[in-house]
Image: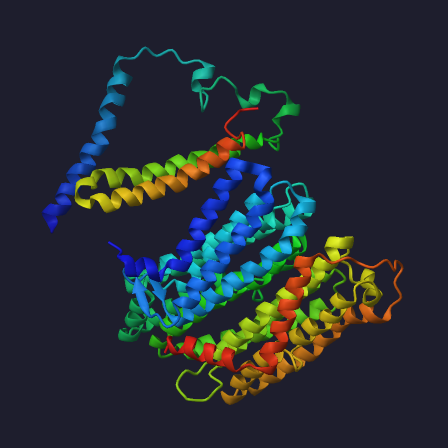
Length: 124
Length: 489
């Protein structure tokens, strides 16, 4: 029992080490020239404080298309969630799972086709 | 790997899934050219699903590792669901043509909503219950907000969505607690864990968990205090959708509540001591609040919304007084099933009347119903039939339902509850007949006759005939309910 947890602990240790080492190395070798835009949260070049007072109101209307894109993204997201485990276990599952997967993808493609046909994929 | 037998047992669901997707594809490929025909495709699909469900009658099986129960209790609701769907399609064709460009999508969503209802009726697994309820909820939100250019429809959908999301989260929390207690998602195993455990902490936790689950189901059934969404959603939604929401989700919400309560809870010895008073209080609150607030409504859709809240309260009496042991004709459970079946036709019929008037004139305010008898005599006359049935006055289906529900309450000694139920029925007569009074005894401003579309007339006649038929010849329905509940014993 205990040595099994030991394996998990080892994994956890390596998992922490894995990103920590490159970060530490970069911190050692990189030149340090901080400026204001680099220190900002998202480093996107546009800062909240830079806008005039009038534009700082966050209750603005977004284009509804952002939401539609997010919804269409879900189609692919769900697809991937099921495709990976299926692909890994493909040999064990055989033809039946293949047919099932085709039906599943068919249903998702119908959703995509609906969006496409209604011109939702064009950014207007 | 499912064999042919399994596919056969889920044939109603398969038919609806295939037809739903087919309608979607037709709508994608041919667009406006086939919108008129898609309603008929939906009708064919629903009729086939109904036939498949009737054909399966007598089946008793657990599919997919016990997640999915195909028994007569589920099949009862699988017969109810397509009937509701067919009537809603019939009344929505003319209504939609005037109001929206996206008629194809409506029938896709409606077909999938009926599919979700069937899945709810068969769910015998906590996860399946949650997923199917969410499935039905999403379809309901979309249908509620279907008139995109109409602000009221949008408002209704948003309110419905926000309320539904919160109650779903609460219910999911309850389901996760149940899973934590029992280590299983199957209702049968949960019940087994309950009955084995003598630990009082398990009892307490189970009580909390089931109360949380009740919140989610109470939302679907619109029980007080989870009813606030109903009047606004009913008022803003397209009227055929309101008709659907008032019967469909409510019926299968009761299906899940009954299955959940009657399979899971008998394992808890102390449970009845807490659960029964809780349900009694909710039932009284639901009936009374629904009826009292309905007294003050002037919009007929809101009036029917509050009336449908009150109706859920009456039905809950049957669950309170449930006793599956004896051989008495009043088992409580059969009362709920008979009531639901009668309510299906009665409430849909009342909404068909509303739609008949709204389609032709846009009127939904009760004072404007003045002199309806001169403008649309058939609609006015049938309003009386449906309102008699909703109030539970013979010779109508509503009376048969109330007879079995109140009878069970009396038999189990819930005298006060039965008395409050009867008192509430009396109150309800007042506002139902407020509408009738306007229609028959007030002078109309505009005396032009109202033309009712043929399909709407057909639905009117069918629902009214069923309401009267159930009253004069209730035996088949009585047997149907008896067989359905035999499966839950």
